[in-house]
Image (spheres, rainbow, N blue to C red):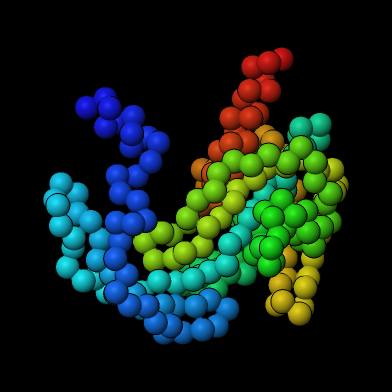
Length: 212
């Protein structure tokens, strides 16, 4: 019904109190943490709970990322770096991404991004705009990712940024707006934040064109 549809647009069918946690225990503690969780939850269309389910929950810190672009220069920037998650990728574990980082304790997403933009691209952000906050892999991981776009004065060419203490070796690439459609269709992009941000940029460029 329309009433049900309007309700589900605003909130989930069930809320946090519809989950009964029976047991939680740490299975691994490192940069990431893994918990073993025993739980029961409400079932759609029924007045009782599920049987006890065993789930493994991967904990990753809250993170934020930003697509840096510049309308006057008609350019945007991405970084390229080695990613262990893409180790078995058929093409390469070196991935094109937006600038991103993990939030330090009590740090806001915006503060994190100002810091990361300097560390990974040497850029000072302005016109910072939030897009979405989302779970990249809610089927198993607790990470919450905050996606932003922002303008900055981009360098004439790419540069290399390294943080040896953190094992980071980053190549900054600067692209022209005219290269965006080709980049989106080559299959080179393989992570959600960069694809989402560049889809926003495509619409942004179209809006600028329609206004002229």
